[in-house]
Length: 483
Image (tube, rainbow, N blue to C red; front, top):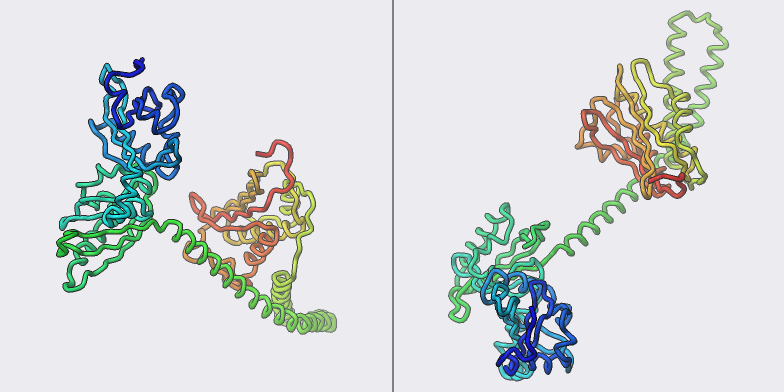
């Protein structure tokens, strides 16, 4: 649409007038707009009006430009704009004339409030307080006795994207997720139960956003000032606690990890001591078994042979426990070298074959990455052995390996009975096991080795039944074509 140089009397009005299209691009401005912004209108044509708005107020104005399309006259806004003399405080009111054939745009009336506001702030504490409320980072709302919003600060737009004018007159509960509305109703009801002194009710709620994105956690404080003739309402302040919540969760996770490492260090010291004290006696017992069997040379009969065999098996089991203890507490610094995973898995299955009735399926992508080969072999052996034991009389073990963007992912899964989700997180702690016979160190060793590589290991239920153990290790050396 073409505009004449002066557009009639509008050119001479004392307040700045700007016409923009539906996207906020400047179509026309009057002489007052030229004086306010310090440049000819011709230089501003086609530019977005938001370019002249203070960064902290851009969101407020952008939402107003959207909401005015559904109205005849928009909500007056007090914002800062970049003018010829620096940032100026102005009042902006929009009129929707997009369908008017003579205008075809949104008419913005811009009135400079800077000097008047300076006078008001110096002389009028009410205006100062209003400015503080409008610019506060906390949502401040005044409700009537029924919980409807009478007025609300501009933070409701900045934090949640809602139009102030559209929020006013609606129940505050409509801004809260449905599950939290009963708690809000209780807090509003309790706020006025104590006379003499206003009582503050606090509660945590999740508030909905205008664009339908994830609800935002807020802490609300409700104060009953219905008996105050100046206020005559419930004052609600809502503080966005999403960053605080994230910080607390990170702190809790860090504290839990510190406690876990301290506990594991104590267990490690105990394991080292026990292993050292058991190793020599067990070696002596093994030697005695050998000498006794050699001395008898079968003369003791079948019953003696069975008892000796039982003693030897139990001694070997105790020795394996000592070796597991040594593996768990031994300091390890991975000796990284390029390893091709597929041949390693095939070799592992030759040295640790499946028992009768158990089948193994391989889905291993060919790729190479830097890892300590011995430690990776031990991790896989422990997980594969666990999978064999979980299947009992028969089933399928599946080994899947993929190079991801930043890590190698190796999954050992079985279709056995699975692991109770309530104990899965504790199975990585030393001496915790669900087996009748077992040291409870297999998964603890896998976790320590994975962490020594800068990776991790997890247990999860497998779709269709069973358990999937997943190792993730940094992919520092990958084959060409890896995703």
